[in-house]
Length: 92
Image 1 (cartoon, rainbow, N blue to C red):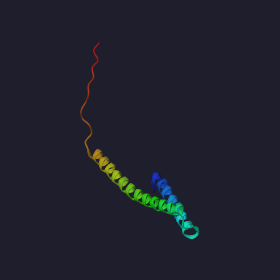
Image 2: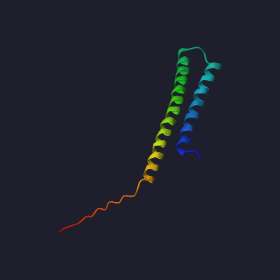
Image 3: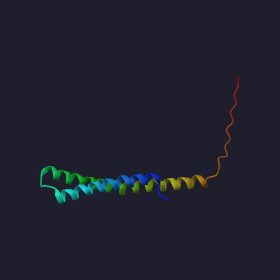
Image 4: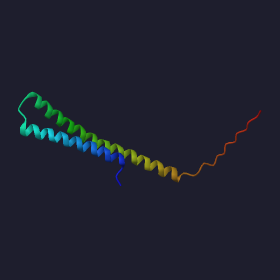
């Protein structure tokens, strides 16, 4: 089963990549060689690079944190229950 947060992350990343791809394809086919079009193409390429890097390193970070959670849960399950008793007395 896919984690819900990753569903929306994938949707955001893939839709952004699709928009960047459409911009680059449009500029390649119909774009005139102007400074504005060059800046748009460079911006789209930089956004693609940032999205891919963030997606890869974000998933690695998330997997690392989930691994820590699993280890902590196993440690809690294997530990013995607390045996100390706390006694509170109220003197008036």
